[in-house]
Length: 425
Ligand SMILES: Nc1nc2c(c(=O)[nH]1)N[C@H]1C(S)=C(S)[C@@H](COP(=O)(O)OP(=O)(O)OC[C@H]3O[C@@H](n4cnc5c(N)ncnc54)[C@H](O)[C@@H]3O)O[C@H]1N2
Ligand code: MOO
Ligand SMILES: [Mg+2]
Image (cartoon, rainbow, N blue to C red; front, side, top):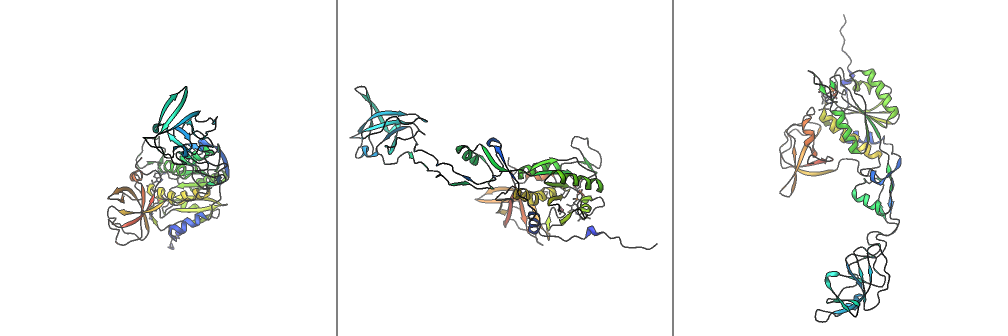
């Protein structure tokens, strides 16, 4: 019998850099539509349009203190030996309008937040006055000069009408909600969350409510991904896990594409006999963007396109799955939402412990952050293998270790990518 070499195409992969892979993915972004949501549901959503101030804020001159609205000139030259006496002619609670005009020699009692009478040019704090009564009339004594403008917030102090307050692409947090509420914007225009299907592949996977069996493990990746997707601004849908069966995978990916904006799978992208996703992305029906990235973990991270929609076939190894999602899925979802900063924020920290592993790919090492002697220090996790699940929960950052044949010494500056939430709770 003739012997021949088996053609194993799947071994031949050309690796792209992380930046190249990100660019390939982002080239397929389709901007999300806009929808209106009630303000109480707008938190963490991304604004779909700019917000301009429909009126100045504050829109009236506001008292900053409980006290008296006065003419500052009335206090000119007064001191403790020669106080000035002003007649109290009105009382202005918050929310009410002045009912008398403040003439020379008079004062209106006023509360914090109330509208200052137009004629008054200063408010003196209650504590700096002495109230007296004479012939049934109320007066105050002032023993110190008051500057014009004192304790008055001018109209438009924070914003003028028409000011651009928040740009499209900004994520809505408590401060943004406060602005929206101030301007009566109770229905907020936000980007519609991309619907993201997630399913796992692997005949070894047990459902999380199944008892353990020898040689099998519970499916943890899809649960982790659901949370990562939600955190990135997507709407995750966890679909039924499948076994390592190529035809089932083909069918399930096809169905998921029909219904969802993005499809994510985990497992089966390496060179093993049952690595079905690696096979699937080579088929005609899909356009493969890459199946090897110059990174660790997650070198086998794979992405493909079908009719403009993205399939992220992430590794089954939990560490690689996590990093693949953060580096590729997160910015893709963020860019669909129109987010101004779709990537994990990057800054520098001092490496807390020597990282000795060598590699010709960039490593994204899970790490925890500390603030020591005025410096940010990043400590690599003790276990950071791609297959290790347990330290994902302890990571504040991904420490970027460039390709090296010597490792990186403690004390050197390294780039770190900030993970959302971090491990500090
Ligand atoms: N001969 C080679 N073997 C491997 C290579 C290689 O280059 N040559 N690459 C290794 C690297 S690097 C990685 S990463 C993994 C990638 O594996 P796959 O993406 O094909 O994933 P699986 O084979 O399906 O599973 C790997 C590992 O992860 C566990 N797993 C899978 N799914 C889940 C899940 N949903 N929840 C929790 N854990 C899961 C699975 O049981 C395996 O232990 O390949 C190396 N091999
Ligand atoms: O793809 Mo693997 O995670 O490089 O370790
Ligand atoms: Mg495999």
